[in-house]
Length: 382
Image (cartoon, rainbow, N blue to C red):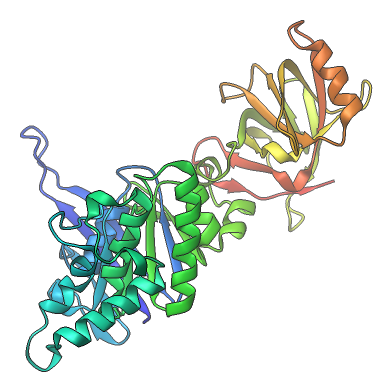
C-alpha cells in the first residue's frame, strides 16, 4: 500500500497563557512512502515523529494537508476503518488474557460480513503467532513472557487482521541491548515475508539505519532529509543530520576556508574548490569529520595535530581519543584499524604524557557546513 502525505501539518493549542501561538508538532510534512517498503522515521524526542504516526493511523486529524492510502483519501477516515496495524511502545497487552486471546482480540470485534467463526479466528491467530515464532506460547499470560516475547505478541496482534499498513512506535525501547538487536532483525524478517508497508518510529539511529529501506530524519516537526540510510550518512544535507547519524558521532570543528584551503586552527587539511569550478569564498565554516575518516600519521607526518588523551582497544578497531581547542565535541574520537599494531602500541606508551598525535584525513569523510545556516557546502579536494 503506497502512502502519500501532502503538506500535512498538525498544530496543538498553546497551554502557555502568555504565549498564545499554536505549537506546531508536524510542519508541512510532504512525503510518499512506496508500497511494501520499511521506512524509518527518525529524530530526537519531541521532533514530531510519533505525532506523524498518530496522524497516519487516525488517532489524530491533521490541521492542514491530506493523507492518502493508495488512491483513497483517508484524511478524515476513522482509525478503525483505515486497515492499520499499530504496535505501541509499551505493548498494550491485556494482562488477564492469554497470548492467543490477545492476538485474537482484533478479530473478535469484526462485525457484519467480516465476522469470523471461533475456529477461523483461532486459525488466524495461530498463523500470526507462527510468523513471529511464538506459537508455543499461546496459553501463557503476558506476565509469564519476556519483554521480547511480549513485543512479538503485540506484533502478531497487529498483523492478524492483515493490515494495509503496519505502524511501529518505538517498539524496542523497553528491551535490553541483546533483545533489541534480535527483535529488530525479526521485525525486518516479518516485514519482508508479509510485504506490508511499514513505518518504524525510533530515536535510535542505529536501529533505523540497520533495517530501513529509507529513513526520514526529522527535527522540530520538519523533515530534514529523506533517503537510503547509507546515502544519508555519506551525504548529509545539513549539520543536524550529520551530527544525528553516526556512532561514535561525527567530530565537529570550528574551521575556515582561506585562500582555497580548508583550515582547522593552524593546520591545513587540504586545498579545495567548488564542484563546478566556482571559487568558494573565504569564510568561517563548521567542519565535520567522521571518526573513520582519520589516517594515523607516520612519524611526524599528518595534517592535523591533536593532544592525545587515551587509546581504546576494541578488538577489530582501535579508537584514539584526543582533544583540540577548535573541536566542539567533548573529545575527538578517531577510529583506526587494529592492523596498525606497532603505531598503536607506540601511541599507548605516550598516553597520559600530553603527547601529540597526528592524522591525515580522507576527504570523502570530511563535510563542510555554513556556520550561519548549518547547510552543507559542497567541495572537491585538490
